Length: 288
Image (cartoon, rainbow, N blue to C red; front, top):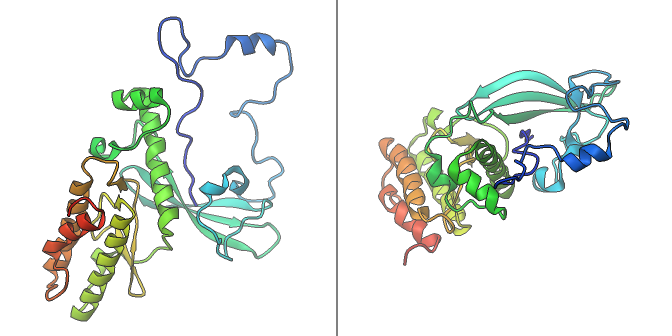
């Protein structure tokens, strides 16, 4: 369940005599003076009449494109009468924490467990070497692009939104399923190793044909569930066509994962780990 913080709000303008993006509209202030107003977001009680749990379901607050690919699984609770209960942190990372949430309908036995990934504020996020990843990521707003390039406060907030949006889009696009042990934690025998390599090559080729590179691939960002490989941790996914360093990201992913397989005795396979980078660049049509 994505649970992303808002990337930014308000208007952004620049120049002498113009308002900043976080300034109030003076004309609006005059127009509503003296009228009764609704409670602010800080004082509004979102848990009003809540029968149990920590908050009402946020399903109706997301757009269809933010709900993942259809068809939705039968176990997913989408009813608006559902409530969410925070169960604690599952995992912490450089840029975000993953929380365990139970979503259920009060008075019934219908419920499900969800993972909510929540990015930290811009001041506490630790995306490393983000310049290369951001190349090719552009919005239609030229002011936003300039703010991102200058790393202003507004620009950093916009970058945070881009990271979250890019990861969710990639997850929905690739339909990544549930959790399992990491590849780095497995001890496959020779036959299993070869089978996992075939899956890895197939997955990377499929990504490359779709114009994508994982961007941070390693044995710690791949899960193995019942013998099936699943890629995770995709906020740094790279559009290798739009990004001028797309071939470099493809090669780095190939070298990183190939090194892990090679260290565990993989041999006699096609392609060999050393040849994977060239294959991916060809599949992405970045080389002849």
